Length: 179
Image 1 (tube, rainbow, N blue to C red):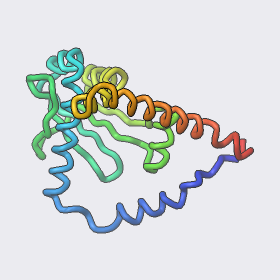
Image 2: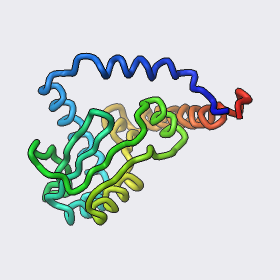
Image 3: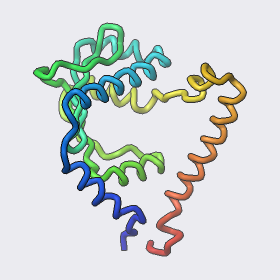
């Protein structure tokens, strides 16, 4: 018997919210722009990632989950920018899992979500390298604001909380006896 998530009622809630009125286009564009700024911030912390992306200058990738999508273009600096709406993507990446809670649960286990990839193989391998090797150093960013010692303390607590959550998610079906 497959265990049922204790949060399965939230899936229906998400469906109702996602199926309701859509946000205005300016808001969608602004959220996408902020996401690109964040991704570029993370990329700039990893010079090798930027070097690898320079070789892909001008390439366009479309990332999609359900009805939500974002089309990104690689800049000559090895960073990301929003691609024009009319741009034809060289690579399409679609997250196959439709439930946000299934995605969160697999992320907590340390697993990647199931994705469908269509397009340029070399570009896809570079994107895969980024996913596997580039991480946001939250502690470093926090240290710039509050100092090294408090940032390290907060980082340590956050790591312990994340480990505890991963342990709970991995052990959850076993603890219910459903397996």
